[in-house]
Image (cartoon, rainbow, N blue to C red; front, side, top):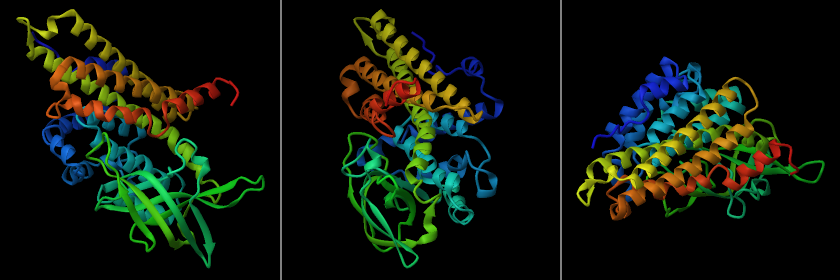
Length: 397
């Protein structure tokens, strides 16, 4: 049996309308993921080690600077270019892909979107080069989807913000190259009695900032995730990011964009499951035939390809609306919901196709299965996406 192990053919991509520049980028990252990431990432994953060498190569390729202007050290591309890179990386490994996604979407993008000119000049060049990573602290031990229930506080005392509190599940926050975290904190009370939430930039070498526990995770084992602790952590008043009292609203905007990026990552994982299943179906024999000759396997792989294709179209649509300046909140939520479902379903089916080997860590599909579940939770659960879609349809909050 012969099989096309690269389902994303040139003809398919042309139908999607990729520009020559976007297609060149996609091919470059596809080759990098196949040749540089896939052969070695399993070892990092099983050791729970952060792949500094791979991240450094990504930095030299300009991936961390893809959507940022050249004046800040970026590549002058767009958000769709970032999404294409995330998809191709996730076809090989999601830990590497989420490191890029969080470094750009959560680490650098809040500064680019809302930071002062000085903050942009100070931080963006190193973040765009990949020499440094930034993180964003939103989630807390007592609040995930209810991010408006922030308990971390920041009091303005003698021209400094004094930050106290704890943040949970923060990606890229504890690596050797992490240089800053931006955190949401209650900075006062609004006229209606609700908490005033602002965003504060905290360099990681600031006294009073420390890392809490490093999590033992089901998946994404080669990415960095930590708890953050702030104990009378003092930073200058000028470290306010954006407007005082607009921190939560600003981050909701970042999340809308980030959902497209997570959808792209999810599509990559879903497509990676197709890739691996095609390879395995062409090699594995049972009852005297390659298993790819059995209709049960063919139908399963066909369903997997259909899910990946549909999810890809969803995130392409959301990204095109975003870049055109059109409303895209509903489309981003749809893309994230559909793509994370596709990743979860495809990883389950791929593991089934591999049988007992799918349960072994030496095969990528086992890693894909472990990585897929978080995609239905992180950057807005599937339930939150359904809620957002319903509201955009005019149904009552």
